[in-house]
Image 1 (cartoon, rainbow over the protein chains, first blue to last red):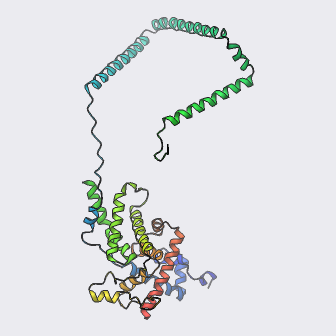
Image 2 (tube, each protein chain N blue to C red; image 1 turned 135 degrees about the horizontal axis):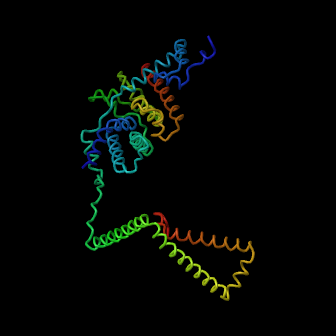
Image 3 (cartoon, one colour; image 1 turned 45 degrees about the horizontal axis):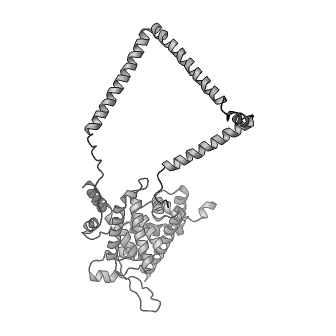
Length: 196
Length: 181
């Protein structure tokens, strides 16, 4: 007889035997150990008897008594969408017509441009050039106006070195975060248990 | 109306196991009926809080077990049967399976005299500590796996196994005493 066979069955092994999922060691030990066999037989009879206990019934009107004390909420049915008013219908019509006209114009424009690429470029390139020049003149005007302001010297002094520029950028970034956080708090619904 | 019929179906499906468990915990028919009703009312009124990731049976058994344990704690009842076996029919059978409370100062309880095995086991289960009793009932009467019992009772799996093993040991001893007596 080897050493493991001398060890009595553990509670888990007895459980496994009762469930019919025991390992080989447990079943072979049972064949050689009268003490464990007796324990197993007692457990088996006990478990069988417990499982055979009948299911008990409450009184015949149990279901009715429970239902009389339960609030049956009506099932959630989605409410039908309200019919749009004539005013809304007119607004929708205007939006639809506008979208149709815009979309149609764009499609027609692209179609014409693909069909007549030379004419399209001849019309577009000068227009783009004129727009660019206009933007450049505008920027020069704004810049010259700014440099003539009395505070411009203070600004250039304040941003006179890369370190100062970095400092100013950090300050602007911090201000941005503070403002963003503030707006987020303002726009978030308060918690249900908030005290304020 | 669909919801009401669903509620009724749930009651019909679970009323027997829930009532059986509670009765075997509190050992009093009227009380078990009241607690079982409370269990279903609590379950149905709070059905919106049920989380589908758990087994529905675990949820309702948990409510039932809590109702029974709360009652036992509140009343500090010794839950030995005073009403006899639930299988007993007629006055004689009830008397034969009723546990008798002694007149001594320590109120020692005498053994059941019935020879009927079911009644003996019912009585023996009734003598277990409540935490052993609900474990053994859920495991071997209701046939719930260990993991589900742990979920129902909010206990670690190892504790559930220990309680069931101890409960079986105590039941063996109680039944042996009954037979010898």
